[in-house]
Image (tube, rainbow, N blue to C red; front, side, top):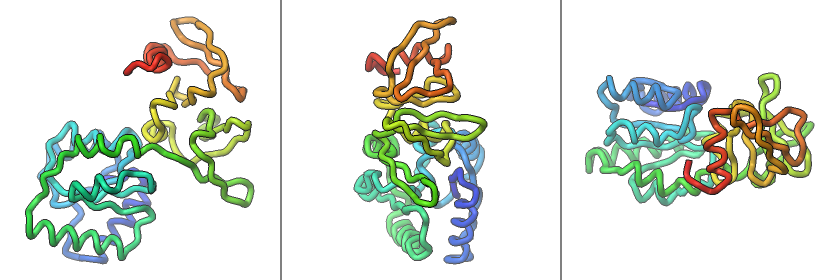
Length: 251
């Protein structure tokens, strides 16, 4: 089974798997946490799962909090900063994107040997999730800057915002860059101690808050630094949790 929210990546992964071993049957390719939970609740479980960690509607580990699964998983990730030792200690393999065919082949062979010898591994996904949580946040972004590529540290980003259906971020030195993620996905990639999604349009960093004002319907209006031409107001639904976040409370 493949759990991956990027359709092109999922199709390429399935193609590579079938090239490596034509006898392997991919039962399903699913793109979200919600759809995965529903699938597991109504279908026999596969022998092996390939799964991206960050999905569009949340962390992939949410699946294992809702459904009891004792199937080995090969996690796929584009980020080096994950706690790789945590995967190894839990008899789980991982593949770094873009996935290379020879590495995929090694992972499949490793699975076959371990499964044949030991059967399904006893994996506590809740513990694994905790082990890597602090290491799993996005540390930097690669962006296009004219004809060049540039790496921006996440700590240097003041806020993310959408405009006309496109997503941008602004750095503390007042430079603006486009980014190829949705706000929903970014929300799970960023350290919640530093970043908060105040509404459907903005994710802001704590250090970018210049001034705050009480606003109508219990909302909070925020002046950002550097300034943004779009008004930034914490929505009614999020204002209560936003105030808790500002106070360092769990929300």
